[in-house]
Amino acid sequence: MPGVWEEHIRGRLEAQAKADLTRRLLSVTQVRGPEIEVEGRTVLLFSSNDYLGYSQHPALKQAAREAAEVWGTGAGASRLISGNLALYQDLETEAARFKHAEAALVFATGFMANLGLIASLVGPGDLVLSDALNHASLIDACRLSRAEIRIMPHADPEAYAVELKKVEPGRRVLLLTDAVFSMDGDLAPLAELAESARKYEALLAVDDAHGTGVLGPTGRGSLEHLGVDPAGIVQVGTFSKALGSLGGFVAGPALVIELLRNRARTLFYSTALPPSVLAVNRRALALIDEEPQVRARLQKNVRLLRAGLSEAGLDLLPGPAAIVPVMIGEPGPAAALARELLQDGLFCPAIRPPTVPPGQSRLRLSVMAVHTTEQIRRAVDLIPAAALRLGILK
Ligand SMILES: *Cc1c(COP(=O)(O)O)cnc(C)c1O
Image (tube, rainbow, N blue to C red; front, side):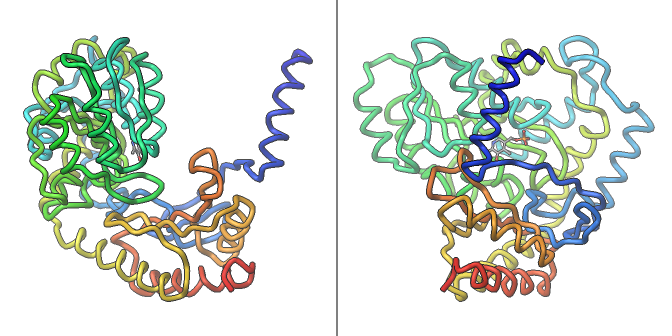
């Protein structure tokens, strides 16, 4: 490697190490529901977005096997060429119905759905009001679009109203927000944002990666949870979290979906999803309707974990989703706590800058419907005990 490059790369890695921010990829060697084997050791999983445990659902495994038998293992080309298997049409009809939207379009991942959506929808001259804690995929999508971006104070509907009042008439404005914030687990003020969007003729786009399949009486997500009418709102969902699979989708007004079909580069220049994934995704949407008890079980587990950890004196961020952030502060102690817990058999990695702002390093616990009560109790015992040993809790 050329010397200037070697020196540059070593320097970057050393800076990362000095700031306690070195990242290491752990190898998962076996999966058995909420217990997994990490590098040969069995640990209890509290870090998966597979909230309903659907990645291990027998009906979904069956759907994957059957689709692979009938259609093969890959789509062979992008959807624009010959990869647009009929499974897509079924899935998109179901995804639109699921989100009570006019139409839907499926992308390879949630990340790619966001890139395709934002870069197709807005461009130079347009204005995007984007929440300060939006997911990295939305931030990158905004940069890619070359629109004017204004970073809004987190979950502050007043701030949006103030900005909207200042916009010259006729200018196109997009309000862009995570629905459930992925690192804080709180909800965007969607009712207020929808109202402002109506009043000022702006478009509202919400990324409900963590609400889809989890929140709302029928699992539709954050809008349903808050009782907001989805008409006219652009919603992004993923199949990669509660639905236990892979893929992202945009659901919303038919006109927006038609634009994406014509403009989204992440749709054209990337291979279509494999048939097994498409079939699993469709079946997973149906399971959300068929298994309300799994969602109820998840909510029960969330309540149990939150109550136990709060009682032990830990500092939690509130929220209705299955994400439970335990605030620590500095990255060093957060990483030490995660390491200690891994030794104890509990897998819940520390989240550190730049994923969260400086001073807000945390453990990010994800609850699953398939956790037993005993497993939740184990987390409630182990986490405060380790925090005490490390002097994080006094
Ligand atoms: C996980 C996530 C994504 C990306 O979805 P993938 O399907 O994993 O690519 C997008 N937005 C938010 C808010 C997320 O949490």
